[in-house]
Image (cartoon, rainbow, N blue to C red; front, side, top):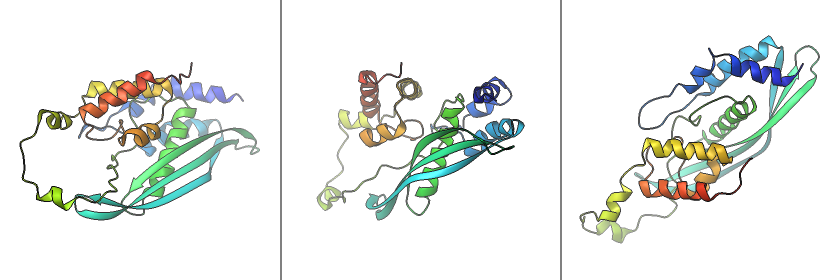
Length: 228
């Protein structure tokens, strides 16, 4: 059996693909759930009598003090590297494997679960070349603020916003978001790269300032690590 037949089968079934493109409208972000991906992949694997296992190769959990709207809090940052291996049901013969990395940020103990789910979803999406227009996380992670608020700044009187500060309050447009996501996919740049460099996750963050969006676009257009 050729595994490429399974990839072709999943992508040729037009009844399945629209479910992956269905957007969760609201708050200017969209997502595709793990359940939706499994609903697409699992029936075809079952028809071909194939099962898969998931192995955690590396994991890391950091706990940092952060400052949110309600003051100091703990923020959990998890990173998980997994390997997904596929086998034949009949004789448990190894077919192929793929690897993926996921990151999860949470205020309590859900960070590791988020990271694992993120990694598995991306492994299946990329291996089976499923078409999708959004990142598979429903809730945007808030930026991590590690510096405490300054008391002097709290006491400052409220001033009228300058034109520069007003610009920072303008969110990026949906056209910019789609362009950024398209450039990331075209150049093979992961969400983790953008998060580490700019502190935002373009596919799911509800609000990204216009100036930051322009910087991300500039970075992507200058990036020379093309996959072709």
